[in-house]
Image (cartoon, rainbow, N blue to C red; front, side, top):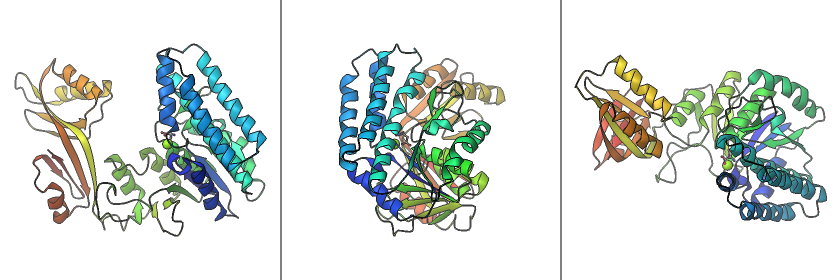
Length: 418
Ligand code: ASP
Ligand code: MG
């Protein structure tokens, strides 16, 4: 059994949907579980619907545009499939029914009920096309097995329940060989039947969840880039492919801000030693990247990650008392309260310095900290992380820039540049 994941960019239009069939045709004899995200920018468009709904504005034009787009693609990729048209129409009516109801008054809960439709629509379209292309498949509602708690927009997995549900509802679909099941990323359901989501870009994590539940032999994330690179190819000219790295290294890279794989994806795979492949859906002959237990190649190529728009905040007690544990625990508590993630920290006797994303939440936190501490900050900074650094790479990245703060461990160098 192989698990495949296709992201929004890979199914953004009729050509993308057709290409999914092309990829699958290369695996005619395999049992497959295929996870698909919402088409293109549909999730962003549905977020607009959520905001409009919450503010009591008219949502009809927004939904109408989504309807036109999805029916347009369906007509191109599965012409004349009346069953698929009816299924898609029913789903749009379900959304209209949701929008006709009173808001729950809880934004995150409303958000999940509305935004989850994007994945349902895309999988209906892709499933219809695959059938049209002669690739039989079963459309499966991911919520049947992805049982979560009720933390809307960031739902947490209830693994034991998922295992029971998968044994009962998902595994039997593979009695016929080869079995091909097509399902949604990103969405789940609580025990009392409410839809939840796993956080933006959560479909990679969904693929890992299904691989874990089915004891898959591998997960492949099909992307528009031919694998994982040592830096963002959009920013740097001569990036190198990371052809083989370990789970640990990939977790570190995504922790430091590399955006290729959703960070939560790797833990379930590591627990069952399921390899993850990142491959190009454009060039099927390209080898791509492998992530598994083997770490011998981790240190061969320096990787660098640049986070722009950072705030370097320096916090000092007003009475110049030393920064000690009582102060730190209060400071950390405030960060947690404001849901601001610390990207880097450093302390001295009199000051505690942190680097965070520059967001409205971070600015509010600064106001809050100022009630107790002396707070200074530098805006417009870049946080640069280099894994497996060498002096040449460091010199090249910091040339002509002022480094406000620097930290080095054996494997990782980080600096804040202005
Ligand atoms: N459709 C969701 C999003 O755009 C989930 C995903 O694509 O992974 O965030
Ligand atoms: Mg997406």
